Image (cartoon, rainbow, N blue to C red; front, top):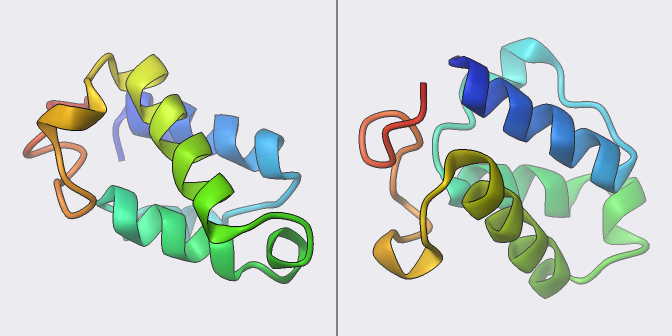
Length: 85
């Protein structure tokens, strides 16, 4: 996992007040996988809608990775497609 993706995960852990273990984070290679993992977390699911999670994750992706949402899909890969390092 590159530094930008690691920064993204840390940012989202703080935003949603949850932990994503490193071994789990390493397989969260697309926005969809990351959104699914966060939205399924019991503490998040009880407080936030899936739509809220999706918007928040994409805003973080745009901010941290410097990409535009409209240029990528939920299945775009962070490293291979978005150029995250």
